[in-house]
Image (cartoon, rainbow, N blue to C red; front, side):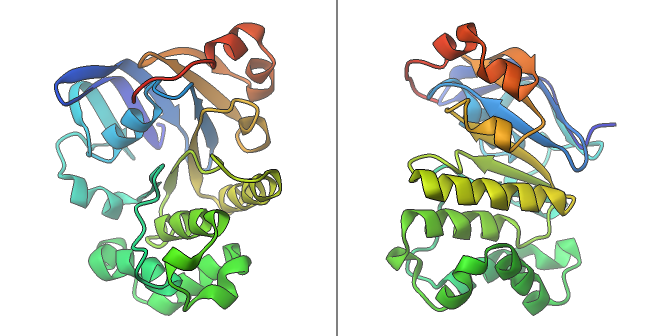
Length: 242
């Protein structure tokens, strides 16, 4: 049984169908990519998992449990960490406070009884933030803010991490560094589902990928092969609204 399973999942945004019968799985400890041009349906797929978008058909299962019947505020406590594309950080709060907020809100559901130990584990992953603990998030660089967003998603010690465009808009050296961090997180046994609009980013990070276009999965397989496929490259061109 897969850790995460989307079976024929369709979703709507403001009454308009965006994704159509999406089938996707992530096994425990696996690293998987979801790639597609801007507007293809990546964010809507992630929000469907987190209960933030109306699922109009199909079912989302996590560890065998149907999530589509749960309120969105119960889903993180099931063991899914989520880094949204726009980060959604509390910019007026410190790095350390952003890491602790999820634990304060639903840490009991995850059985977290040593808050400090969990936060120290996050700094172990993102050692670059160690001397920025008391810095307001609004004063961080773009790369540092992405690290905080991913670190906050780790605060509930998830079994699965959803990363929506974690590498978007960053300098190449920062992209390379974040790729190493994502691999490190996966090597710790946490399953990772990474959404990216740049198909060339994902072969270094994931073991297999799905390609989404106009809300439908149109290809899946080995990331190196699909990243080098001319048809996939053509498909990735363009833009739209997710």
